[in-house]
Image 1 (cartoon, rainbow, N blue to C red):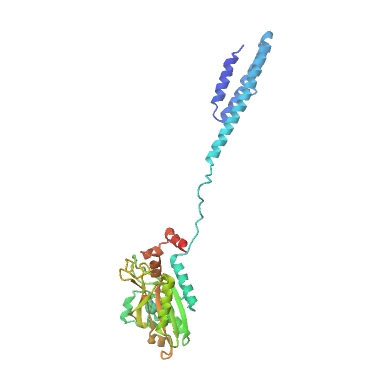
Image 2 (image 1 turned 135 degrees about the vertical axis):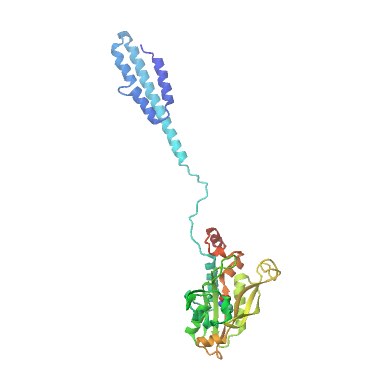
Length: 343
Ligand code: PHE
């Protein structure tokens, strides 16, 4: 008689130790397979003495039943463990905040430009854009800045050839509008990029944006300019804002003024933004020089008007408290996104 008890405990131990479904299947073949150890025992039946056959047969059958049960039990356990591991590796934490898909947003300069356009359209202005490469004629000559005029030193320019350059101010658009519309009235704003031969730093950029306004008609009073700019200042910087004119010089306007807005940070008391003065210099403006009108084909005794030039970066920097002009052009998404939320 083989030692059935020993075999049973061997089987129990080995099944217990099986740590994968593959290992378990190998055991099944080893013990329960057609040529397995239990089948071998059955084959020994012939040589077992008659009186022991019954006992032997029962013992082998019992081992076979128990082994099958062990196999089934272990298989279920290993399958459950495998499923658990699979689920653990695929866990989704439903409490995690979702990831927002990134979306583009408009540059703050575009936002300010649009705001300004809306404002002036509301006052009856037409928006006119022009070419960035312009004739020297429209950029300087027609703006009363002749070749030998010291005013040319005011703007270091990027020439493509002796006659063409990247426009240094949006005045270049206006000089063309003047020529095209003479002798009729005009009410336009001209936004766009302008270029100067400047080294970039916190307050200078070789490329920046302007928006210039031009109004021509019969008897256009300078008080209209003041009213228009006051409206602009209050819309952009708050209803409490005041403006003041200081005498200045531009070749294409006569008289020329520098326009200050009462500081929107301190309300005029004096703070670091307005350098303690209560006023912030915001733009240049003036009565269109009669010479400029004549060159474009107007009769300056019948028609007059005013022009003003707004720096879009300057407005954006003041409005949002931005201290470095380069932020607008480096396209750091963290910077651009700020203005999406402000909107
Ligand atoms: N063209 C001037 C500049 O670029 C600004 C300006 C425009 C001043 C219109 C007066 C009138 O600095």
